Length: 169
Image (cartoon, rainbow, N blue to C red; front, top):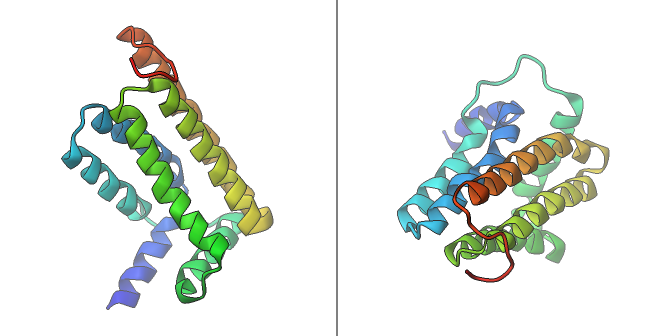
């Protein structure tokens, strides 16, 4: 039963639409951290984790996407044999989401933008480092998400006359 669910979810994860929307979860995560809403943060994380199988499986899967996801699947299935580098990768994801929430919780748009940009950069670096040529499949969704998130945050800051600074207001 579990294997059937995993196969079902994996087939949907090959739909790159989920790759494009996943970075956009930064915006509600930042909003709920700004509002200091634990419930909103938790719901956003659940949505983020489930978003990979919201879309139907594509009719055709790009070979680079398939190779990259095969690498990720192999990595996940070898969880008992993880190297310190892989453990650091998992901790980096958790740490970056925590840092993002803390930046917006403390009302620092500047640090929030720094963290968002670092998250996108590190995602691409990790993807290419782990997935070789297939890792480049992550580049366009990461850049599109980054541009949309940065633009939205800067627009909101200007709209509400909020300072974009590395200092707390």
